Length: 294
Image (tube, rainbow, N blue to C red; front, side, top):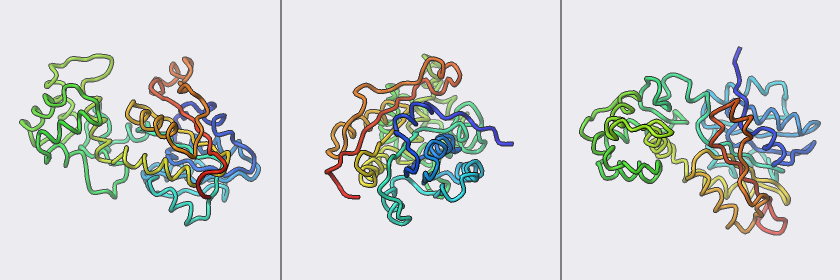
C-alpha cells in the first residue's frame, strides 16, 4: 500500500482557495494528490478538479489516490507553463481557484535514480519530466566554468559559486549525486551551516534543468487568464527565488489583488510533524472582475 505524505499547509490552502461546493479548481502540481483530494472533498457535491504534473510517476500515484472521485477529477501529464492551452483544450475555464505547490516532493527525493537528493547515490538526472533531454549531468560536465558559476549564483544564491565551479571543472567527469556532493563539500572546506554544503548547488542545478523560474512566470500569467472574477490564486513556495517572483507578480499584475499583505507560514505544530514544511511560504491573490478575459 502506498504511504502518502501529508501535503504542506493543507488547511490554510483550502481556506485560501475559498473552496465551495460545485466549484472548479486546478492543481498545477498534483504530486501524490493530497491537496487535490482535500479540494475535491471540500467542493462536493459537484466540484471539479484538473490536476497537472510533469512527473509520470506522480500522475500514476495521484490517479490511484483520486480514483474514488471519478469524473469529477481528471489528470494531465503536462508542464504548467501550458496551463491556458490545456484549459482551452478541455473547456475547463473560468475556474474558481488555481493552486501551485512548488518545490521537490518527498516522492521525488526518496525515489532511487532521480538524482534530486545529495543524501543518496543516484545518477545526476534531476529532471521532473523524463521526456526532457537536458540533465544535471549535462550541465555539470559540459558548461564552461564561468557559466556554471553563474548558474550556482543565480539559481542557488551560492556565495562560493566560483570556488565550487572551479572544483567541479577540475574533477570532471562527475556522474553521481554523492560524487558531486563530496566535491562541493571539499570546495567549501566542509563548512556546514544550517544546511548541507551541497544544498544550494543541487537547488541551482534542479532549477536550471527544469527551467523552473521561466515556467513559473508563464504559468502565473496563464493562471490569471483562466480564473473567473473573484477566483483565487494560491502559491506555496519553498525558497526565496520562487517566493520573490510570486510576490512581485501578485503585487504588479493588474488583474490581481493581494489578499494577505504578509506571507503565511506553517504552524509550529506542522513544522514539528513535518520538518520539510519549515521553509514553506503561502501567498494568495484574488482575480479582479473587470480585467482580462475568460
